[in-house]
Length: 327
Ligand code: KG4
Ligand code: ZN
Image 1 (cartoon, rainbow, N blue to C red):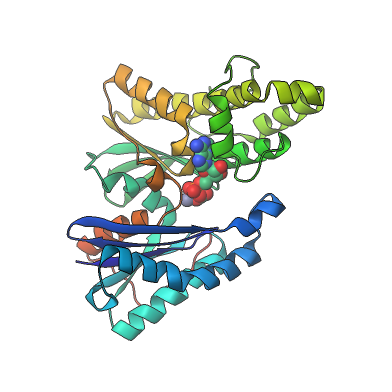
Image 2: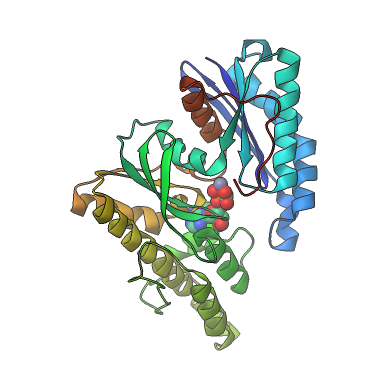
């Protein structure tokens, strides 16, 4: 089965092709227009998707060496995401599906982050996934494919949002997560102790206190001091975020008794989080899967693999498929 996948939930226009040989292409067109605003501007995002979607899909087909006539179904992100951005991808997918008379498969973007781990591996069920992105932070108990239970989530900011907002306070460009990660590598994580919220309260997270704490900390220092110790501050922030995430993941493993864990979502590209989770998995004798970096942040390959898994279960949609921003 050949699947064309389209992802347009936020500020990346992406298209991928899946065949019997696996993922054959994964094109990602990132939108630089938002840089000047320090965050994603929804209306500009949907306009940029409209501009690039045609060529992104064409490029994905070309690189895969597969023609549109050879595509058997189209997988597309249904949500969660920005309504206007989702609409562009869904309308484009519907147009192609109608013209070719092939089925469409709506994919949940957060499911797809989890199943990105199935592109190169075959993780065993049941498992717990720590899904950390710009909009979500969740601990998900996955009993079998698409049988999910969210057992922990953030009560305010997502982990990626915390990285991005603290980055903004530090004067770093959006999205600041990758930049903070890079700067942390030459910094001292013990330089300053930032708060780790809700450690003893179940499996939920809270990151807004950390953001406020970083804001006051930076405000109370001399500008030159912050500049001089930027690496140390970034390392201390990364430490606080990664520690909470790993401690809660450990708790979720103990609570559910799973032997397999996954990292998923953009923040799973974070090196401190990856290192800490690897160490924890080793200590607890768990199998750990983490997608390769290009499958961590938003991409259509993860939509393709999830579409394939849904197709295997006969879970197709029809042309009534609608975008669902809070899916
Ligand atoms: O999954 P994703 O690409 O988009 C959403 O669905 O939100 O995640 C984007 C988030 C951003 O907040 C970005 O700063 C964060 O992932 N991120 C990172 C790293 N790479 C991306 N955060 C920390 N360290 C990284 N290396
Ligand atoms: Zn995402």
